[in-house]
Amino acid sequence: MSRFTGFLKNCFYLLMFLLVVPQIVVVLTKQYTTLITPSTKVGIISFTQTLTNSGEYVRNLKKFFKDPAIKAILLRVDCPGGAAGTSQAIYGELVSLKEQYPHKPVVVFVENVCASGAYYIASPCDWIVATGSSFIGSIGVYIAAPRLKEFINQFKIEYAVTKTGKYKTILNPLMPSVEGEQALLQELCDDTYKQFTEDVAKSRPVLNLSEADLWANGKIFTGRQALEMKLIDQVGSLSQVEQQLRERAHIPASQEIQWVKAEQKNLIMKLLSPDDTGESNDDLSLSGIISNAFNSWMHQQSIVQA
Image 1: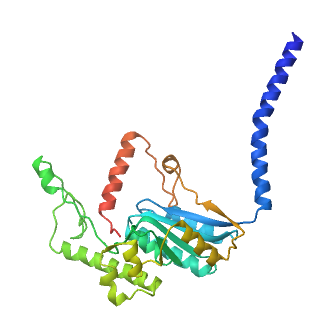
Image 2: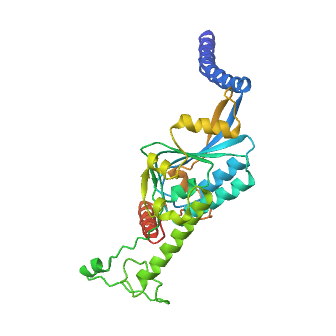
Image 3: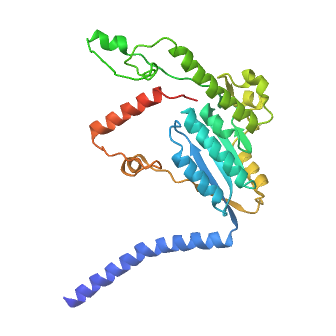
């Protein structure tokens, strides 16, 4: 019996050995290859969602700019824009970091869409590459103000608000509009648009601010048209992006580029962990999540979109 037990033990150890050794070999091979093959790290940050919070993007930008091992940064943009404040916050941080680290190039690649607030972010970068049929531009501002007062009146629902200030409920969809409201909202849009176009023209001197109606004004262009308008620098694909990164970061052809992706929280982590503002999602029930989603949607309707 002891012989049989010993045989089983040996079989078990052999099996474990066969399972573990290949993994060890893989790890050692990767490390050895990294040591003998020269490579240069390039950070990648993807903008693929509507811009509503700058925290994660700013954190990743700071991390890549401050890391001396990261020689260049690639922004992969496939984004329709979002809140004007968020776009401007990321833009401002990017401008500041580029001033602190002037020798770290930032290249943008657009495969499908770089519109509105997303273009705001792309504008101060060193080089913008886009595919010929991508959509570029939409430099403009709007405020959505849905009105549900007549809808709730049909169901004989009374909604009363006690307020101080004539315009305090200006974007409350359940309240009727007041005199002068539209003019005030137009002033907000005009001032935000003025900041948007001034920043873009400052970041891309090839664009003339006096001709903003030609390249801004909410207009959308294909990548090929955007090149003619000087909104982008090159029509191309990832091959052209890599070429620009190599030239600007002085990466020789003999070196491999080691792409380093920015960390991103998934939905579960966003629900379970606090964000950069210190606020946490306390109500994780289904009703809480639905309520938060509705409140978020209502919030989006009440802020300036870019």
